[in-house]
Length: 328
Image (cartoon, helix red, strand yellow):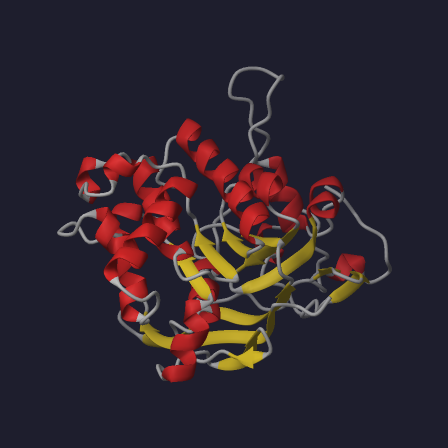
């Protein structure tokens, strides 16, 4: 099956000031490649600041790329705001992290769901647009009597459902979900995840799902890409990543996930050290200063490159070059 979304060697570099005020080049995303087929979900995980959200905005054409290509449904995506970009963006929609910030507090939520149809000149007549919006309102689990409410009158979970309905009104093929449940409590977040799965089954959309929560990614994703300092360090199916993580960073992330059944709030050892400054990246492998398996004289000087382990399975680690994993 041909990929719906194909990203190749994507990078975003820009000048920024360091803590001392010195101007340096920040490599927010640095050589990211992946693909996504229709109806499937790719989960992108990693610590804060690893480039997940920047990648999402590059894919949507909201930021210009320094280099690389983004192909969507056979067309190239760029940040040039022309007619072709508008046509592509109708089919690629963003679900924001903070639903309250994503909504206009001055307008009833029903009007905000209808608004994309007006902007793109879809559906003839106000009544037809309203009926379509109400149908989607109900599809995401909202009562029709909430249609005229304002965002501040709804709960966090209800607001996120409004954001979903607004994204769906244009019939997208791809939803880019940027930490869509991070602002919700656990029970409401679980409801939204179940809703996303139901909507994917119903409408056949692909999801690019950005998250720092590995438990959520395991539930919703088909494949996982693990990011560290702007690069994908490991990629594979959910089963492969969670059953047999090959990169030491992936192994450390999984060990830091709270486990049930072994005492209250049991958590295995977290990753040691701090994420290096993107202005002062380590030489060699980016992860070697925090890696318990780093080989002295090798990992700190040599770029690991990408080692292919299978058709959709690869890892950036010198320990994998001989085809055998060394687990912590």
